[in-house]
Amino acid sequence: MFEFIFNGTGNSSSLPSIKCLTDANSTCQNCLGTLKPEGKKNIRRNTSAILRKSKGVAKAPSSSVQQDVVERSDTTEERDVVVVIDVGKTFISAALEWFPKYGLRRIDAVLLTHAHADATNGLDDLRTWTQNGAIQEYIDIYCSEATFREIQKAFPYLTSRGFATGGGDVPEFRWHMITTGESFAIGEDDEFWITPVAVDHGKQFPVTTQPPPMPLNNLPQQSVAQHDLLSRVGTPSGFHDVPLSGSATPNTLAQPRESIPLKCFAFIVNNALLYMSDVSNIPDEEWKLILNPPPKASGGGVIEKQATNSSPMARYAAAIVDVLRPLPYISHFGIDQAVQAVRRISAHRNYMTGITHPLSHDQWVSIGEHLESGSESDKPELKEVLDLVSEGPPVWFRPAFDGLRLMIPEAGEPITGLVDGYGQ
Image 1 (cartoon, rainbow, N blue to C red):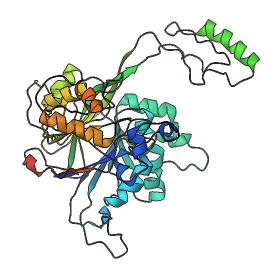
Image 2: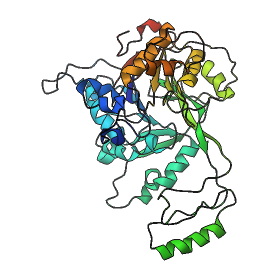
Image 3: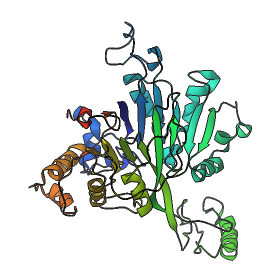
Image 4: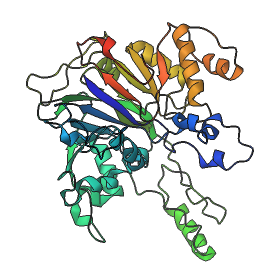
């Protein structure tokens, strides 16, 4: 059995939203609910997760440790193995809350789903772990080559110490490139074996020539006019012209005419759990991998991609699936897409993550209860959401919340051992 902790369950902006909290006429039940103690589950940081496999029995906490804090994992006779999935903009605030609460300390590896800010902008905060060997000498980072290249462009000092400036204090990483369908092991005794699955997460707009110039509307007007002329002469053919006037917004950029899917990793963990935090579509080839994941290789190590079929090899204990909002979005599942996916995955338990407002946590719980029972709701705001869901068999689906901990049975163990914050 291993632990799965939701380090964050919100969208890229996190919740609550400053827009809602500062609007005197706001009716957002989620954001306004965070102002009350009972509304804590409506506070959602960027999607992130923690895996832990215990290797020893924890010693009794010392008298100096607070009653609600589990003794740190470095007091076990054999050190636990801890893996973090995504370190976004809110990672450090989440870690400051959940690491002490659950007795977490060392990080054995970080898995990155993709290169967006809500998955990677907390990488710099990992210096707290590695600076002067404070907790550990380095952290292993696993990501796709595309994600690595984006990080290399945005934060070169994170990939090469030679680009450090100022005091030169940067985190110490060891980078590992991973590919969909090629499993790998983490831990001295291969406590976790991970299979990446490349799902679609909206679109990307490849540029084969120089990118369009950045808007310069914050410069003197004559400079803007000069740059506007250059932009119209030198704009790549794949982009529309953008008039760079004083009325343009600072982040207005020309959009390319053609796009391709942006790939984002989902992760299969020990063939017992599926984590899919950012998804708008699952390609057919990746469905085959989800429904029939490769077995753990003898002795651990990397497992090469194998031929698969579309029939499930084993039922997952839990599936965590992206549900941004009731309606689908260009880069995220809506409720109907998510329900259709979890019906096909057929996990024992299914949890929503990546949730945005205005629906509150309690409203999502009610929606999940109706999906499980197959009943209708007499509340108009819930009925409107349930009416979006295609007909099909009932399914157990609940919203996760920050700090929720699951105890996941290993593949082949009785699924009835799964324990979560819903008390089931």
